[in-house]
Amino acid sequence: MDLGIRGKQGIVCGASQGLGLACARALAREGVNLTLIARSPEPLEAAVDSLRQLGAAKIRAVVGDITTDEGRDAVLGACPEPDILINNAGGPPPGDFRDWRQKEWFDAVNSNMYSAIDMIRRTLDGMAERGFGRIVNITSTAVKSPMPGLGLSNGARAGLSGWVAGVAREKVGDNVTINNLLPGLFATDRGRGYLAYRAAQEGVSADVYEQQFYASSPAGRMGDPDEFGATCAFLCSAMSGYMSGQNILLDGGVYQGTY
Ligand SMILES: NC(=O)c1ccc[n+]([C@@H]2O[C@H](COP(=O)([O-])OP(=O)(O)OC[C@H]3O[C@@H](n4cnc5c(N)ncnc54)[C@H](OP(=O)(O)O)[C@@H]3O)[C@@H](O)[C@H]2O)c1
Image 1 (cartoon, rainbow, N blue to C red):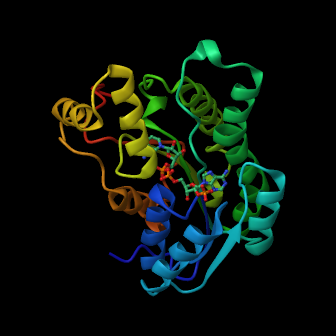
Image 2: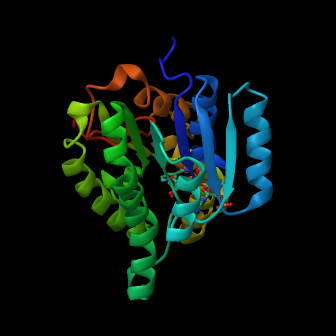
């Protein structure tokens, strides 16, 4: 299926590995010109090389921190008029809320709420003027069902979801949509790190905890990042203009709610 976005300009944040890179892969296959940002240069260069091999049109890489004004200035300097924006940054560390003070909370809100809000603030009206825009925020299953030990993520991402619910209606009439993609457990560094954290909390080995997780998950496995990327590409497609303000859960059926 041709998603109708060949030649569009896309920004993917947190794009050197994991879910961000998977989104970039899926968009590259559709012929989107990409600008990627991540903090460490070497994995970012490797990501660019891997995307070029997929035949992606034009790819630019920006080494920077998307949770800072400087990082956001740099990526928007490289791609001032994006048609597609994938908001993503690293998740906050796990822990116990008794240990978190203002700094930990402000960092989490900055990374997983404000950074995406500021990227949307800087791009939404331009997309509307040009008559096309697709914004996807990578959030978490934590928005629907809190994850043990991830209180900072549960809180900050719920804040972003609440704000997006309002703004996603503003420009859909100009063909600009904003949706959230909610990963359950995916086979990335972050996903494996969370399994290891939970195993330590439960006092079992990572292998044992992984098997326990699989037994409790209807899909019986972790998600493949390319499954996530494919869903992201559809949300960025020309066909998805009637869908905005949605929270799309990709968790292999773990969340048990009807809605
Ligand atoms: N994987 C899962 O199972 C899962 C589940 C629920 C939620 N999530 C959330 O989904 C998001 C992506 O997860 P992932 O599994 O893809 O993580 P990952 O494998 O750790 O990859 C994170 C990517 O983001 C980049 N990054 C991190 N902080 C950044 C920053 N401040 N500025 C620019 N780039 C940054 C990293 O590169 P650098 O470090 O070089 O910057 C890397 O490319 C995270 O917020 C995570 O918490 C993941």
